[in-house]
Length: 161
Image 1 (cartoon, one colour):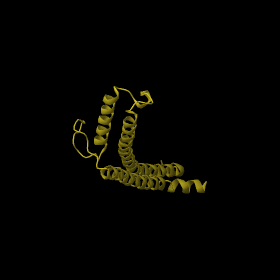
Image 2: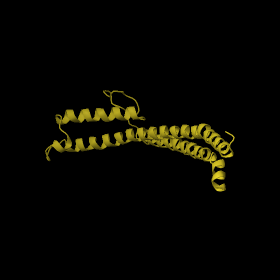
Image 3: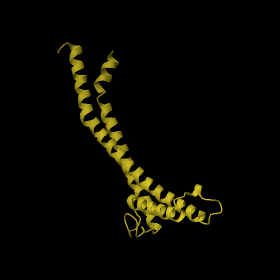
Image 4: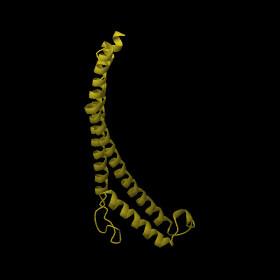
């Protein structure tokens, strides 16, 4: 019984430790998310891609999710015009446009992968921010509540309440 009373007396420290762990994990996630976004942006910049004149966002360097998506969309539109609306699998094997369509699929896949990289990094940054808030709330609100509950329980045991 004495061990239980001691554990109850010190249990309020657990939300503080958990809050610190959550906040530290959140800071790590945010820094890794920003680093991943920078990596994707740098890789796109190294390719020196500029959006087409007829893209949603015309004549700008592709260095973020919006411009990468705009360029992927315009590539798809151009290829569908060339093939009369047919996709790669719908073309005859001897169609002279097959290599062009295959190249467009490769380019669009790379651009869409960059878009996904940007969005996943944003998700990681958001989850990191959520973890920081959860950690701080644990330490600021749950720890005092647990401490107060242990004091109330001590008073109940002593019959002073």
